[in-house]
Image (spheres, rainbow, N blue to C red):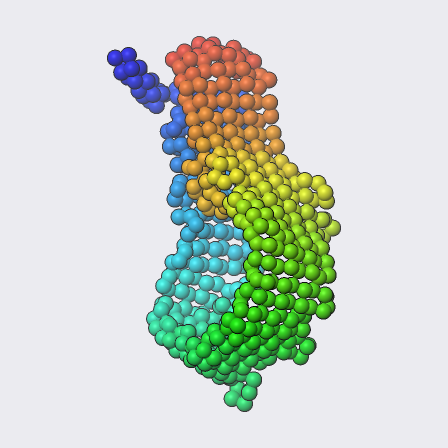
Length: 487
């Protein structure tokens, strides 16, 4: 009976909180306004700085405003964020994405829609495209239009590195326009015919009936196969002296010779030798992937897989121990007058620690111990983030915004003198700005402390006592019995 009476009292109290005309002013002082009816409604707003947070139904619906960034989430379906003049939206992640900035507008819903437009007055580099699978429409930079209904009929212009692609009942028939020649595909990839646009041009042409036979000559390149992949041969040579020759008698023997290196393969892919004279370089795989040795100018490497291996260059270093359990790498690179050094430990495939240094000064660290813990620290931006658990094994902004808060029991965010902590999706939260600290346990308990305020209340003002803005306060049944001095 006692338990039933307590439940009735608790439900009645919650009902009063929701319907009371004073609940909207549950807590307010000269710095901020706060309402906490978790998990239904949570609201906080700093009056003198641009920080505001609204939450409905725990982590499901959230809206925030923080300095130059504001965002909205209806999880797990949709999230959007606005930063300066850039807006990004993510829906049905990782399938849907919208992005708009000063240069372009992009809208994707894989595999149905792919739309991209360059904004005026910027010069269009790729034209415009609208894809609503199976329908696609586009316009080139020269204002030429194209479109189609895949796979029945369509035409692309200046897409996929080709001047023009026309298809009919694909893969039954397609035609591709290049600068110097034209190719016809019938029952792709079985039959392909290539012809020069100029009948007197002998540098282009060819035919294949895959996998039995094929031969093509396209400018400086020749390709041939017989019973693919058992015999494949190709060659390339241009006027500047760059060349490449390849032949493969699969899987017994292969030879590759270029103006830079020579490669010989026996019983592909197990035994391989790569040599170069300028700069000096030797690589032996005997057999791949178990043993490798590399020696050259400013590079060396050794591997006995899966026990140990390394590759050391002038500005890079990669190694592993007991593959795939542990990897380590270093990179040294230059951007302008700034030198960056990056090192990364990766263990158990999905866990890692990455650190970046700028001119020997630490600037960034990322640590993930999957699926338990994640932390991020950026010194120039004065940002620190960590949370538990870390079930998502990689970073994708859309996935993180739409699913991340649903999967985290503990979250901590810090930027400069601001800190925000949530536990159990907001059941407990801690917020600090400068010397001001606020603790909240849902609507059950709130404490506020700064140089002017030391205050504690339960049930959003059912009972409250302390000092707010230097003035004593006593609340009972949501009524403040010590009104403030108006003078």
